[in-house]
Image (cartoon, rainbow, N blue to C red; front, side, top):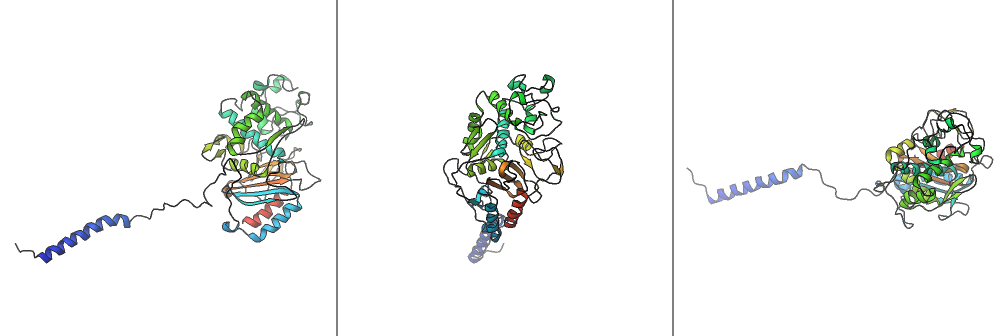
Length: 369
């Protein structure tokens, strides 16, 4: 057998060492680089702290928005008697404007936009086992809470109150027993009316505490809202600053979730933002729904063809109150928009819906698209 020289032995050892090194390195070359950095803070979802005034922001330019269209949008808002306007994207403030002496701490009435607070609170009462929206209202308020024949009253469930389909006469806005008379069987007629207030009584009775206390502990305090309910003789209206309204919009964007906590059951919230009946398909549980083929408006039995707000994204759902109090929620853009103020059209101040929405969205689209 031939003898191996010491030089050859050294070369062979070096060759084996190189092969061993290659075996170790090859798997690493075949792997993608591991990125241990945090996600882009402008893309990841964000929830502001529940205490204090800190709230992350994002500039319009960083989102590629058309900044030249911002001034026309602001001018339109001023022209239409707005008090405040906020846009959130991924939870961060991109625009926050105050007009006509309004400030970040000023409280303002939500009007009927606050009905969505009631629907969310009702959902929590159901998930806590305190009520079922499928059960009769009289189970909580007692027989004879209306002036209807008992057989007709027994048809009315909590869900009928949530969907504005109780069938109770809507001629009088004062919700007292003598005004709660029969007009149609529950579930057969959609009519926007103040009788929704009885739902607050249902929740209070089921929870064995006043409605505002239950709402405060289940929603307000957990998402850092400020504000209060004004329980007037005719109207029950929530008042808050603009950021508190935006906080609820953010909860709605995440379908009842705040941070890591699912406050409102997601399946229930999905019901809130889905057509609740086939009479007015643009209405859920106090939420107005865009992108449907028809809609109705408060105070009318006319069915209009087309989408609620044609210029807005089809997947938008909205809390809408008189004098154009608005929370627009747009999942496809991870966006929440809030508008508070006086009526855009002083001659038409009382309807939850108005042509203002379509005009406003044309201005918004010029900025964000």
